[in-house]
Image (tube, rainbow, N blue to C red; front, side):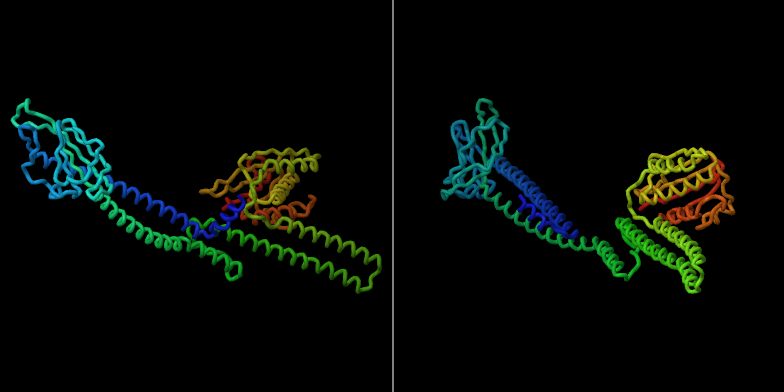
Length: 474
């Protein structure tokens, strides 16, 4: 069993073109075989029907030229409808069966005609049989088709002189067999030629239809080598989702790399100043007490800078095509913690979440997004916070987007202060504890997901409303 599995694994074609060509070839061969079989059967039926009609015409012609004497002896007064009836063993035979005997044509002298059946038929009864076994004039075995017609002889329109008789006309089956062999040879010759032409045409069509796939592979190879920055946009509709996803992945990875480089550069640049201050203090020969105080100040500053850059790096980047995450379960975990922190205020958080709403991204990104928005709302709210989430419909088969909003009943934000509040390190009120980077982290996350953030006044609670729109995915 394992040997057969190994054979099929080795035999199975790995090329799409080979797979399609193999499948199409098998289908084409099967179609041509069925077509040939159907044509052969149709021709055989037609040939037999023509043979029956021809033998019937011979029988009808003979019936017009047959007479019987007073003693009911057979007398043929006209020439036979075909000269072969007068040539012994010619392959075309006549039998006349009467109540008291039989009469044969000259061609029936010598061969042993079929003995099966061949009796009297009722008036106007017709039969067509075959192939029936017989012995040829040379003693070899053969077969023949036989047509019979039941008739009534009435010489003087006197019912007393009427008597029935039957005419049988037989023809050697070799003539029909020769026709079938010629037809089959021609049919399979032409079908084979057509099949070869179709296979060649099929190969050309497959190469032409798979050309866009090869172009995608070539473009992807150029991207890997650094010759181009992204895939082109001129591709068939069926390949557009693939190339768009590849481009989105490339852009995402490029943005992530650029963001990491910027974060490291910002961190290095930020640490230059406190390090330079420390170096200056050391070189200046200051007192130990002054050095200790300066070290404390600068170390706190560096710690804040490192924390800030780590927070920025932690909120940066995400993977495309992540599994959809539910909103409510993640929000409940965050709200439970915030309610403990702000227990003295007695803030109540309400949910209005569509069960179909999903966040397509990293779990950490969703926690960061919800955590910063909800914490900001708890910080400024008087009594109530409202979290709303519902899917953003997408055209076609694309995945749905997400609309997420957080409202509070606090003082709100004046329109002219919105841009300032969203800046990194800026707090809405210096008296309120915080670092002023939460909303900027939210902005960076939303930018990573190509969404948008709108800050307005809450129509329900009267405070601030932060609305996040994440677009539908590919």
